[in-house]
Length: 170
Image (cartoon, rainbow, N blue to C red; front, side, top):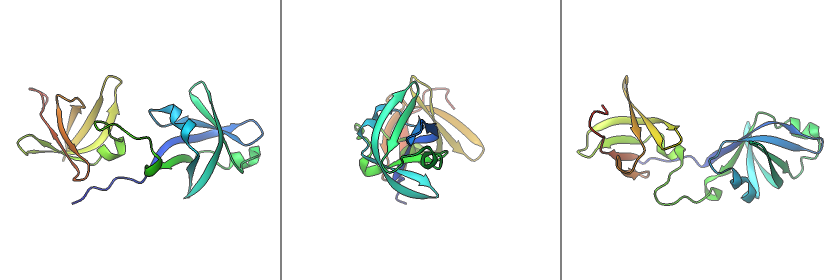
């Protein structure tokens, strides 16, 4: 089985309009909020993906204010409320070798160093100090810290992660 990752990433949700000239208020869904500064275009998920060009971006508290080209009135902007902003994988920020997108981690099968299957990653909890992988196997759930001392190998192409769990974790 070859594990295939998603081709688009949600980076924000349009939650409201801003002013009368077509700007929208966006709740960022990305770790790197400043990534909006580099987006020349995005995709709006409104039943289908619509490629939309970014005119300008500014920040207001914990929100991103975006003006899209061809969205020039509050009425046009209101139609975008509750839709998601996506980018395609090819235009996503480049990650260092030891970092992965959450959507690429979810679905990986987790094995011990001696090839015992623990289960499948169903969620990634972001705790602040380090991420925690939620691994499920039937009705059992294991929480695995995303630490270099625990995670020995991540193979996205083959849908596999190898871990060495600390004593007493299971």
